Length: 189
Length: 189
DNA sequence: CAACCCATGTAAGCAGTTACATGATTCC
DNA sequence: GGAATCATGTAACTGCTTACATGGGTTG
Image (cartoon, rainbow over all chains, first blue to last red; front, top):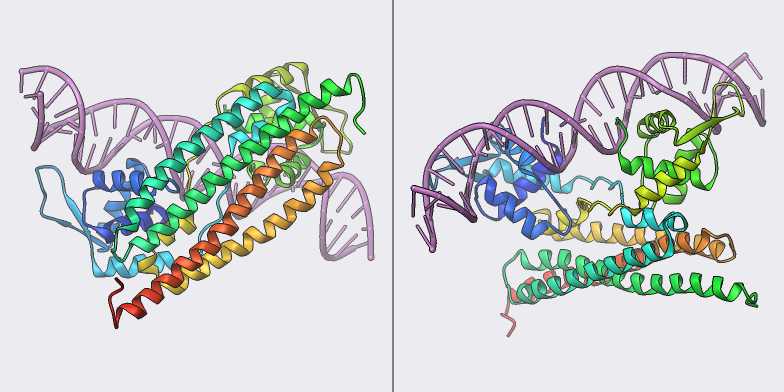
């Protein structure tokens, strides 16, 4: 059981959309799920081996020497539905930016401001990328499109929240220097 | 180097606010940073040992037999500022809810709806908890308060985004059943 | 005095990344 | 024919969690 249920779910899920090689699977996961999921080769290949041994996926005719295309089997589809129905495991959050801001007094106000502005820039880039994806998706009438839309919308809401937070945070940081400057001559009432 | 830089940063940061035991440190991290950070005993104690060996923290008189209170040393403070100034490592996201929704067609519309509603409920609970914390924080005039406020605000923005997304997502899910019901008799123009 | 909380620490093991080794195919 | 890309796989290592072992202190 080298690969976790989580990785199996992503791999089976990917193959449920179309048969492909391990390499393509990783690209698909990076491009389509990248906002909220990641798998490396070191997980994908062992997972493929395990799933094949269990008869949940099977190799199709190789497109070229040394490569093989995997397809999900009916048992694999059943297993996928089973895995999807399991309760999602709670995430252990590790947000390096917020950790640094929490100890922001040690770090210094200017460095904090840079962290926040950086976060805002990333959120803006992400948001514009997601808007494009959503535009494409809304002309897609496939049966998976509305579900994929849900994940894109989640990304957009999250990016907008990041943006709004960053702007508010910059205001708070302004308040710190403002308060200390004012505080040297007068205490605000 | 059993403990990572990340854990060292959290431990030194915690001790920069007040000297305490490893046990208390873990409680503090859980309660104060829990929204965006986690450390387990298995990381904290080895990290404390390493940091003590490096002279970055030191044991103070024990409050009771078998326990020791750690305090940060001047070198430790310097090291903390160094660590905080390092670029935050990008997070590898693993959002089980979004992964399941992406393959939502396999999972089924009803199960998706339950996932979304569950997410909404969690966001609501989180939001009300954070509002209380913010209220307390705004009467705190300590020098760390504005920085801590930044992290609380981030949590609130994130929770509100979750809430808004969940409501929009439920609308999209309604659209699926609505569309398929309408589609059985007529194709929408 | 039993139950519960405070407190420290270790060991086993899983999950996950990275780097490496290898080679086919395509395109310039 | 050389570079870039497609493709597979393994091994070493790091990070992190969990469970366990142990014992002091407090409180009902």
